[in-house]
Image 1 (cartoon, rainbow, N blue to C red):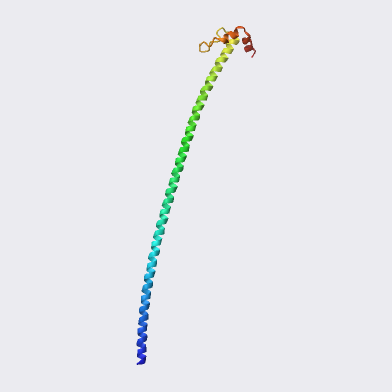
Image 2: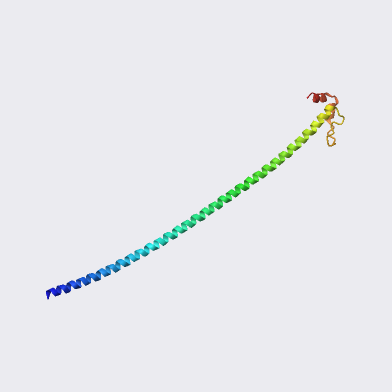
Length: 151
C-alpha cells in the first residue's frame, strides 16, 4: 500500500511537473513570439527610415545638380553677355580704325598732291573740297611744301 501511495504521489508530482513545463513552454513561446514581432517592427521601421533617408539624399543631390546647372547657366549667360560687349567694342574699334585709315589715305593723297604741286591739293579723291583755311596760307610761302618734299 505504501508503495502504491508513493507511486501515485510520484505520478501526481510528475503530472504537476509536466503541467508546469507545459505552462513554462507556452509562456516561453509567447515571449519569443512577442520578441519576434518587436524585431520585425524594428526592421520595418529601420527600412522605412533608410528609404526616407535615401529619398532625401536623392532629392538633395537632384536639387544640387539643378542649382549647379542653374549656376552654370547663369555663368554661361554672363559669359555670353561679356562676349557680346567685347564684340561691340571690337566693332567700334574696327570702325575707328577704318576711319583713321581713310583719314590717313586722304592726308597721303593731299601730301602727294602737294608734292606734285597741284593747284587743287585740298580736293580729296572723291571730289570734295577740304578745309581751305590756314593750311593753304601756310603753304603760300612754300616753306611747308619744301618740308613735305624733304620727308
